[in-house]
Length: 464
Image 1 (cartoon, rainbow, N blue to C red):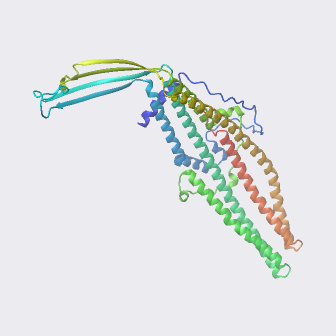
Image 2: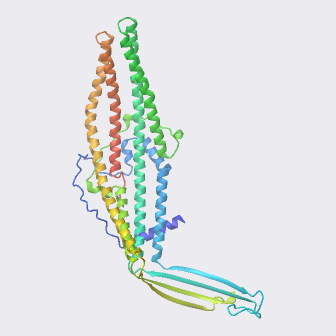
């Protein structure tokens, strides 16, 4: 049955394509170029954009999300609902044909009968059989029926674009969550390494304290730093578990059944992405395409409302036959043709109000369409700006990390030789840990900015 509905909806869509409605005009002028500097990478639009990050495991998780996501399955069900609605809306374009067959028996229970009955005292039971076909068709003088069909077909398109938007949001969410899990695992590893460094320094301070060359204050300060590092380890592990739970939810499965490999976070790379020009965005984002389709459907609804205010002509044809015996039921055929003209005269303003409501709905969706376009431009600009800023930060942060590592090694060596106080060692420890943590966070932000740019550009989706 579902296949039948889909095929019928497709046939209606082909019929609609014979006279396509003009594309709605948003009234907005797309900028000639992006405000933020964009990459000049080779132009390509890969539907499997996540492969550019170089992670086979991410590819596997994406496939699992597509198969297991309940949000995506619900969006697909909404598409099927819209397809069925399109079949319903297109049905009045053809005559409605009904077949009837009646079998009737009248029997006089007592008395002599009366004139309204076919039975009397001499003929206490009468049988009657009839069969017939009736066809009813309302002539679509004003195009209201065609407009209703067009509106329903545009709703099908909008629901398909909505499903694509849900899928794009889902896949970018999976990529973001996976990157977050890897980054938090890396931060957990760094926290453990820094804890080991702090404990190593604590042993050195304890040795010097036992030898009388370090004070109780220095020992307490280093113990405090070790405790702080110990606190960081379970905190980061907790965050990593929460990210894993969120990832499992996106896949539509409990976290107990999700197992990830030990892929190093540093192996998750980001590609150069060509953002094209702003005008390309209108054909690359499914949410903009959905807003456009709904606006076109609203325009068709206005035509439906206007047609309802005009007279309509209904044609009815009946073909039937009847007899008192079943064998003779088809031997007395007859036909009946009827034409009816119905014109609205007084409805207390209902039809006019429905037209006004449809017009206001069209204006609302026009503003929503404009908002979707502007928000699309803003999403790309923010992603490009983020990429540019993060690339600049990472250039200097790499130097910051190298110098922090060198400073800690020098301070630790000098303290061991008695040429430096513990305060300097403590400060270099904190600086090193902060630099290492910042390095991971910047890398995560850079990966997520590339994901955001792919999402802002519509992923690999392209309107047909």
